[in-house]
Image (cartoon, rainbow, N blue to C red; front, side):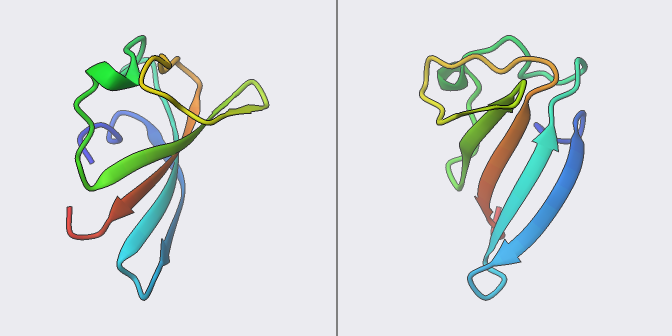
Amino acid sequence: MRYIRRGDVLSLTAIAENKVEIMEVLVSYKSSIVNKALKDIGFPKKAIIGAIVRLGDVIIPKGEDVIKEGDKLIIFALKSL
């Protein structure tokens, strides 16, 4: 959650008997992950960025993709984080 706190959580949904959360997060300019490649973020092992929505385009992320201010991230996370 420390990666998300400086962004805005736009939506949050629990699935799989409330064991998994899906979050849509708007990346703020204050976020520590802005202008960093996914492979360099050190994202928690029990969470994954499933998609980046940038200017209306959906990107299936790879390690080389860089997070930009204004991106919307679709994050899947186990609630046990």
